[in-house]
Length: 71
Image (cartoon, rainbow, N blue to C red; front, side, top):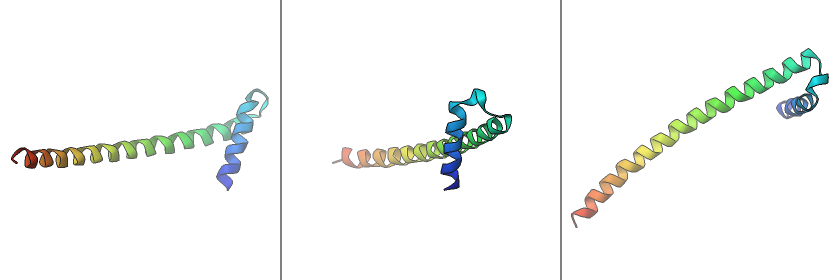
């Protein structure tokens, strides 16, 4: 729940950033940086997973085709 409240606070800060204190700007930047880093890491992990799935599928497909060509 705290993360949702922080996200809402960041949205408010971003909407009126010109009138926000340096403390609030720093809070928003830290929150955004953390979210960016987490999102980036998740994308990297999902990309690796997707590559492994594709490779595994291709190996199985190749074997399947070999078996069906001989019939």
